[in-house]
Length: 216
Image (cartoon, rainbow, N blue to C red; front, top):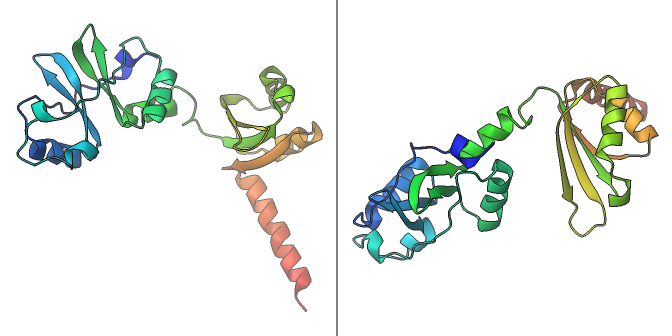
């Protein structure tokens, strides 16, 4: 999925003759911290709320410091996520040969991840801690499928101040008690899991039984 497929034409744009007051009003209305500045379809840059708050409300966009951060129409959505994260922006203008084509905001990216990247599929999420040398997505997939489940999304990230990797994946079932046992049998460290009523109910029952045991 590319930027041109998820861009929005509904997000507001500013012109060089718009005032700081108008820009801040639009940012507040649309709950955004950045807006593109466009003149005759030509992309001039992006202005931030933080910069505008330091200016006089009657000043114009032509006087503002504009950031030239933009993305090409063919940039993949995963790269868009990375750009948003590293640049700490909530809107990325899509620009083709200097012409403004629309913008991608965080809402567009989240909708894509939920609908197309498997994040929004029903099922349970499991988080493992794995050493890089032990990480084999193909082997993990075989273990999961042998237990009767399927992986619908998969993500790997480094654990801060650790040699381990955090492997997060979603499976297409909420009944993961057997799968968790299988993963532990294969010496995977299960850091956490989510949306697994079967396991949560069992853990709650064991805790309540333990508390009754402690009662005099």
